[in-house]
Image (cartoon, rainbow, N blue to C red; front, side, top):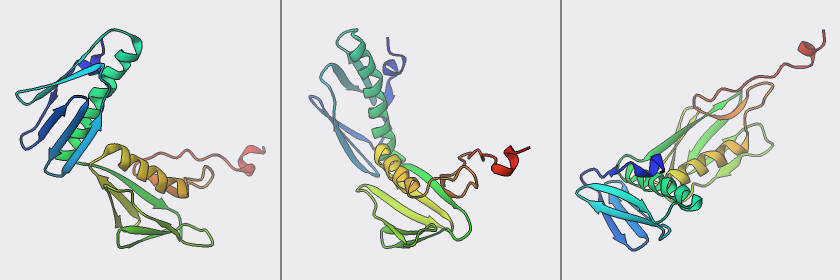
Length: 179
């Protein structure tokens, strides 16, 4: 049995769930999300609780059981609280400016880098930090990864764009190795 798939999802008040065959639509105070799921997983909504049941014990369907539950839970959390990721710019001369909804990064390239947000994602700038927020967990993570990819942390100096709280292990330079 899938331990994750067995856990029922509690639906908070103010969240509407529509089940139409394989399609699930979740509406809440922050917006609405919808997704199609495999028919081998049966989703039922009773008294503010979502429960999932699988059709057989095949390995593929067992894996889908937990995955479907996690995706549904993320949809419910997204429309009630939303998701956010924070990135920080580390390095002298590394700057970020917000122009409307998009960002302009100055990260020691010969040109500034413009980044437009994905749909359903908002970008905010707070000094040397970029806050990525939205209701879709996958899109928030994807947008944060795209921003980090512009200038990932350098292994020798630690400069670059990193997630807030990310530990970057600094490698020793040539002089530290010789000896």
